[in-house]
Image 1 (tube, rainbow over the protein chains, first blue to last red):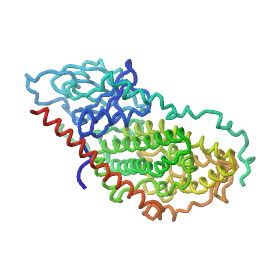
Image 2 (cartoon, each protein chain N blue to C red):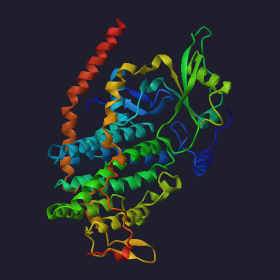
Image 3 (cartoon, one colour):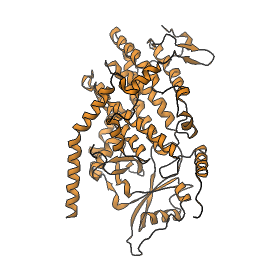
Image 4 (cartoon, rainbow over the protein chains, first blue to last red):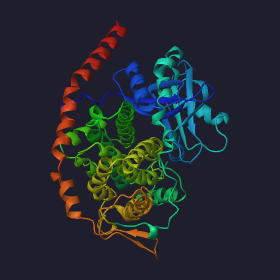
Length: 189
Length: 316
């Protein structure tokens, strides 16, 4: 079989409302960023609500768990040329072990010369975490492709009319009230 | 660092983390067996979602109303999405989606046995939603508590969406059970055919389930096959009976002491026969997947060619 479906993986970050942060919902496969955005819409936005999607090549996302930070000595060490230019890095993390459908949440950004340096600075600053972070992701601004605000009506709003995708649509008069009878009162045949 | 931890030390640490209720994330140390079991379970689960599109998709052109057609299209589309969530979770463990799909198309991968049975009437669509998806939700709600982060998150997302599948099926069967004699007969016939295969979905009995002990120790699973099956039976039996439908099991009875609905013996020979490829629809399902894969090849080639040209243009 030819290798024809694997394509690069893209991490998908979804923002539910303009006042909410972007959250990592999963990955898609796509040959380029535009198709990645379309696939991300089809896979992760079949329901309301979505205001914006970001995609970034999975290989460009630097990920460290708390466990890795703890068990990898000198994890921040790297050969970085002094004159390497600074750019913007987006910081995401996970601060709860509660049941959730998202991996990490966008908590801000930082100027740095590499993802590793960005993570070290983010942790040192203490401003991106309240108590504990179980997982950190760093994404360079240059790796992100975003949906446009003018695409919101065509990409995301159609999902809002499809109310039959929501379970609350089915609470009509069709359902009899829950049987109050005891099991032995129900005739078996 | 000078001294590397031994395997036993790492394992003890790993199990302590699970005991504390922490999620294991990609990148964390995990025993090979944990990784292997998760890849096995998640990939089977992903294949089930994708193959599961076929028995229901077959009825989209024959839906009796536009409303039912829209609902069914949305549901089948959801199953495709669920397959993608799960392939994503499997890929976080170091396998490629492509190799998993190749194994499916080659007939080497397992998927849920239930999809090797045919959908003979429209009422089967309602019964799959209520009974089959109901059984699936039971299992998936448990797996949402799984110790592996990506699997747990995929399950939380799937359960939220799957509730719609269950409700639309229950609505349909409720209407038919209260409808004309013909509608009622269709609902009964669907229950007769799907009842036992649905109970088999929870997997072999605990006494024969080789993986259960390890999976529970590492909290990949929280409950055993038999526990989940019994909980499901207890929930759904009174609902069918309240609608006046008959459960196709002469031995079924309510046990006052345990509060359980007790079923007769499950025909595990049938289960193994179907899982080994000799069910009514095994060949058709794989054939349909292969055809879809081949017929979609030109789309993938066109997207790839376009992406390549864009890359070349940006380099020039």
